[in-house]
Amino acid sequence: MSQVSNNTHMNNKQTTRPALLWLPLAMAISAVIGIIIGSQFTGGKYPIDNDRKINTILNLISNEYVDTVNLNDLIESSIPQILGNLDPHSVYLPKEDLQAANDELNGSFCGVGISFFILNDTISISEVIPGGPSEKVGIQAGDRIVTVNDSNFVGPKINNGLVMKTLRGKKDTSVKLGIKRGNGSKILNFTVTRGDIPINSVDAVYMIDRTTGYLKVNQFGRTTHSEFITGLNLLKEEGAKRYLIDLRGNGGGYMEIAIRMANEFLHENQLILFTKGREKKLDSEFWSDNEGQFHDAEVIVLMDEYSASASEIFAGAMQDNDRGLIVGRRSFGKGLVQTQIDLPDQSAIRLTIARYYTPSGRCIQKDYKRGANYEFEVFDRYSNGEIYNQDSIKVDKSQIFKTLHGRTVYGGGGIIPDVFVPRDTSGITSYYIEVANAGLIQKFAFKYVEVNRAALNKMKDYKQFLRMEPSSEALLNDFVTYAAQNGVPARWYYINQSRDVIVTQIKALVARTVFGSEAYYSIINRDDKTIQAALKAFNKHKAAYPISDK
Image (cartoon, rainbow, N blue to C red; front, side, top):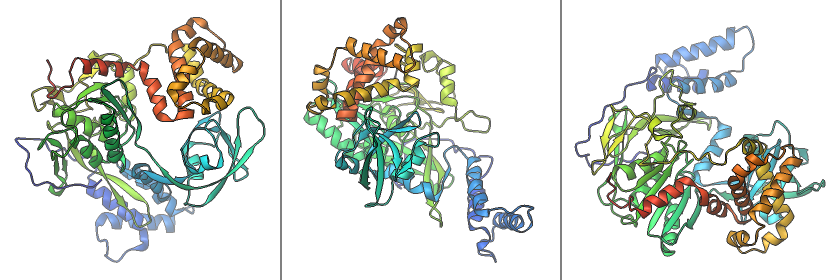
C-alpha cells in the first residue's frame, strides 16, 4: 500500500507508540533477504551477521546433511514461518500465487468469465459474466464442469485454488470445458478463449425505497472508488437522499481507496486516518479536501464480524467524525498497514509497516500476541454470546476516545456499532441446517432454472419473475419433495419454522442465476434484520449529521 505524506499537523492528538514485537522487523527482513539470496551472494555484499549465519546454515545443510535436500523447497517453506512470528497479516506470496492475489485487488484478470462453487466434488457454475468468453460460446449458469481439456475434473482433489489456476491463464489462450447440463448424461464440449475479466467491487446498487439507496461493496480494490461513485450518482439520479453502504463480509483491500471513499462524505479539513510506523517517515495523515459530492446526505454503514481492514478505516472515519451511523455487529479488528515488497524471483512479501488510527486516535487492532487465539477469535464471539447479545461485547475501558462531537468510542479490537443488531437465527432449524449443508437449496434453485429456463429468459427483470413465479407454498412443497428424494426426509414442524428463509433463498438464488447479483441482494435483503434496523434509524433521523447519542 502506498503511503502519502501530509505536512498538516494533527490538533492535540496523542497516541502511544506501539511496542516492538518479540522478533524485531529489521531482523526478520534481513533473515528473509538472506534466505532468498542463499549462497549466491557472498564476499561482503551483504555483510550483516544474520545473513552470514543463515547462509552458513544453508551451506551446511547442502553439503553435510545426511539426506539430499532441495534447498529451494526448504527456503519456500521457511519464509512463511519467519513472517508468521511477526503478526497475522505479514505474509509471503510465492511466484505462482502473486499474480492471482494482485488480480483480485487490481480489478481484472484473464479467464473464462464464470463464478462457481463446488458441490459434491463437482464445479457448478453460479453465474456467467455478461459479455465474457463463456457466455459467448453458450455456457450457462447452472452448468457443471466435469472435464478440462478432455481430462476428468471432478473428485476430492478439486478445490477453489486448483479451479482458478486451471481456468485462468494468458489472454487469447484456449481451454476446452466438458459440461453437463440439467439431467442429461451427455457431455457438451465448449472451447473457451480466455479474455480480460473485470472484477466488480460493488455487487449491487438499487433503491430500497423512494429515498434510500443501497450499495453492496465486497472489497476495496483499484476500481472500487470509481464503481462506488458511479453507484452513488446513479442512486442520486433515482431520487436517493440517504445511502445504505453494506460492508458486511468485506475483508478490506487498499487503504487509499477507503480514504477516497470516506472523502466523498466528509466536510473540509476533517481527519480521515493517520498511521504510525517504526520510523517517522512511515507516519502519515489523511484529511478531507471538501471535494466530495455527498456532504449533506444521511449515511449508514452496515458491518459485521467479517468486516475488516479498509472497511474499518472507512467506518472509523465516518463514526469518529459523527458523519455516518454504524449498524450491525463489532467488526473484525485489523488495524495494521501492509506494503507489498516484490522480490527478485517474482515472489513478494506483504509486510506490516505501520498501525493505523481512526480520527479520534484509536487503534482498532485486536490482540495478536503469542497465546492470543487470533485465527478463531471471531468464533469465540459466538461461544461467548457477543453475536447475539450487545451486553456480551467486551470493551477495553482503558481505551476510551471521543468522536468529533463528544460521543464515546473504544479502541483495541474492532469498531463497535452505534446500533447493535444480533445475528438473525429465526428459521434456523435442524432441518434447514441439514438441507443447507447438503447444498440442496442451491441445487434445487439450479434445477428450477434448468426446467424453466425458456420462460425465465423471456422475463424483463427479477421483479417480473417475482410477480409470475409459483406461490411460496408451491415452491416450498416442491423443494421438500426434492429434498426427500435426496436423502432429507420431511419434518414439517421444523419446515414450517424455516419456511420463510428457505423460500427467500430459493427465489434469490434463481434470480441471481438469471438476472445477476443485484437481483439476488434485492430479494435477500427484504427480510434482512440489519437492513430493517438501518431503515428504522433513518426514519428517526439518527443518521443526520452530526450524529449524537440523543
